[in-house]
Length: 200
Image 1 (tube, rainbow, N blue to C red):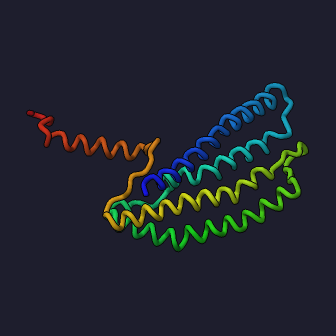
Image 2 (tube, one colour):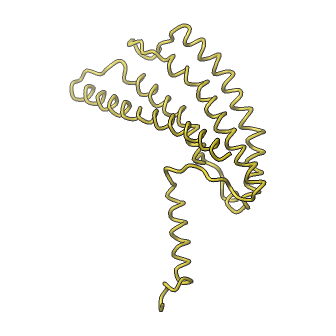
Image 3 (spheres, rainbow, N blue to C red):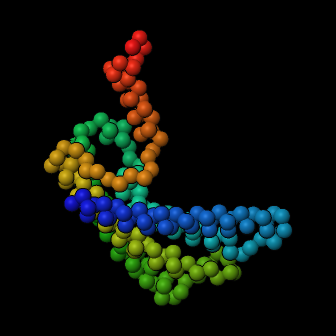
């Protein structure tokens, strides 16, 4: 089961990191626009379109990756005080009641939305450059599918945690600063017990 969960995590990671390279495209295009607009006094007609298309693609395709790292924002003031079983039970209920229906709606409506955009080879209405926007809209149902896969993996994690009383292992490549601070605090608190405190 762990291999299956890691496979979905790795798929979400690969997609998220692949689309993260769009930050270079976004940075270069915005920098170029600033230079030609304010130095050469010759603004482009495509900069706005490129900026929202690249940012939108990154935002869409990072969702499953963020979910795989348990990185979405939650009001965890109370959540962190619960036992793992209680956390998993609450997560499972929320996944079934809210997450799955929302993702199903995203895939259904996103498919129709994207299909129409691709069929007409939709271009941006915000500039005369005619920048294609249908590739961005085609990512909407794909985003829903990847989120569904990752959500399925998270549901399995919840079930396993309810059974065993501890959260299954997940892939990690980044860590929140708060987690590092808490771990350092716990290590410092444990030092006197290990004979490393004052007077040891």
